[in-house]
Image (cartoon, rainbow, N blue to C red; front, side, top):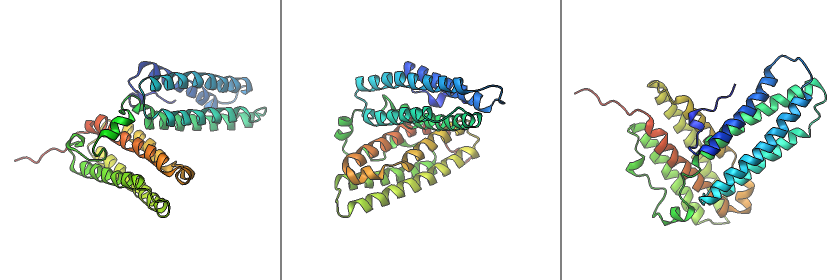
Amino acid sequence: MFEFTDDCKTGIELIDQEHRHLFNILNKAYILATTEYHSDYYQNLKEILAELDNYAEQHFTHEEEYMAKICDPELILQRTQHAFFREKILSFDLINIDEFQEQQQVLTNLVLFLAKWLYSHILGSDILIGKLPPLEEWMLRENPCEFTDEYLVGVDLIDGEHRELFRIVDRANHLVKTYNAVSGYDKIIDILNELKAYTIEHFGDEEEYMESIRYEGLDAQKRAHAAFIDKLENIDYNEIENNPQEYLQKLLEFLLGWLINHILYVDKKIPGETPPAP
C-alpha cells in the first residue's frame, strides 16, 4: 500500500486533502492488481479510470485556481504536467481490457504510473506551491544564485556541496541570460549535464551522511531527491532548441527555487556534526 506521508504535505489543507484522496484511488488499483484473481475486473477498472479522470480534473482545477490567486510562478509548468497526467489516464481507457490478462497488465501499468507520477509531482512541484516568490521578486534580487549563510545546515560536506550546486546554477543562469544561438546550445547542454551529475553525487553523499547518523528523515529525503533528479532527467531538449531562453529561464527558476526550499525546510532539519571534545 502507498502511504500519504508528512513529506508529501504542502501545508495547504484543500490540496493536501485532495492528494490524500488520489493516494486512496492509487491504493484501490494496487489492491486489485495484487489480489488473487476472483472475477472479471473490467467494470472495476473502468470505474477506477473514470474516478481518476474526474477527480484529477477537479483537483487540478482547485490547485491551478489557488496558484493563480497567489500569482505562483510555477502555474504554467503545473498546467503542462496536469495535462500530461489526464492524457495518460485517457490512454489507459482506450486499451482493450476484455481479457483477464490484459486487465492485469493494465492494472499493473496503471499502479506503476500513478505511484511514480504522484510522488514525483507532489515532491518535485506541489510542495513548492506558495513558497516561491512571484517572478518579479526574483528579478529584483541582485543575484538569486548567491549562496548565503542562511543556507548553511551545519555539516561541512553538505554545505560545501550546496555551495557548489549554487555555483553551477549561477553559471547556467549567466549562460541563459547571454545565450548565443551559434555556440550556446552545446554550452547549455554541457552545464545541465554537469548539474545533473553533481546533483546525483551530492544527494548520494548527503544520504550516506544521514545513514551514518541514522537520521529518521532519510526515506523522505530519498523520495525528494528522486523527484528532483527525475526533473533533471526529463528536460525537454526540443524546447531548448525551439525556445531556449524562455524554457531555460523557467527551468532554472524552478531548480533554484526547489533547491532553496529544500535546504531551508528539509536539509536544515538534518542534525549537524558534533564538535570534538576539548
